Length: 190
Ligand code: ADP
Image (cartoon, rainbow, N blue to C red):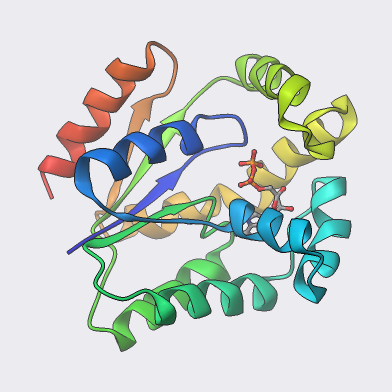
């Protein structure tokens, strides 16, 4: 079983590369951002709760995220493994994920981080905002908040996996296919 954490700042290309990984390796996509947006679209209580954090570029509280992920893992049958996209975003989430996977006799194979400089991230997010309809993609201040939150709260998650010898950083700037080739060679080494 392959359980991969795809890591990187907002706009790094996690969603794009996740799609390619799923197509090649048949993994189950678990994007917390997508799950929250689905709830939002359906107007559930969880969606309404998450909205106020998401719209401002802040993180949704850990216990809410963890519960949602646990539900998805527990209700997914017959999977070759998961690609975790946008999760874990805090060290507490990473610790909770290890516990959840352990209950199913699973573990994280590795974390793959996409490295992209800040100026390129901002350009990509603003470009995406023209078509994504996402409130958090369309406002300079919200974009800056998300990058700040990433640096303060999410970056320590990389150290969590590095300590376990499970961290690999790759260049996230270049052709989508070339980045995917790099990712594939890391996955094939697991
Ligand atoms: P991006 O990577 O472009 O920031 P995502 O779709 O991953 O976009 O996340 C959008 C928003 O959803 C985040 O800014 C945050 O408010 C919320 N969110 C997503 N995943 C998490 C998570 N693991 N923990 C807390 N909040 C999350």
